[in-house]
Image (cartoon, rainbow, N blue to C red; front, side, top):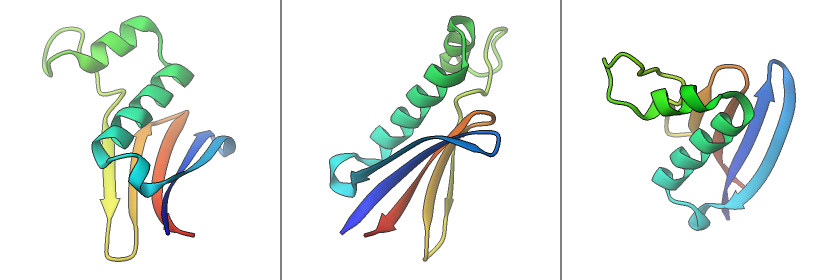
Length: 92
């Protein structure tokens, strides 16, 4: 059975860990969940608003960009810098 393994880090310190069945959350939902966890852990209201504004506008920022790293053997989504949250698809 596959799972999403979600972790949060503040520097080297793990601050969050949760395993959720893969079929319970779509890829897009996981991307939004990572944004929400990152925003809750580290951003103020103005930073959150800026993260959702159109790019190249005065208050826009890249604080809630989700990146994807995948290959045949792994799939990882990551959001934030410090703290940051990541979700890996694992067997288990």
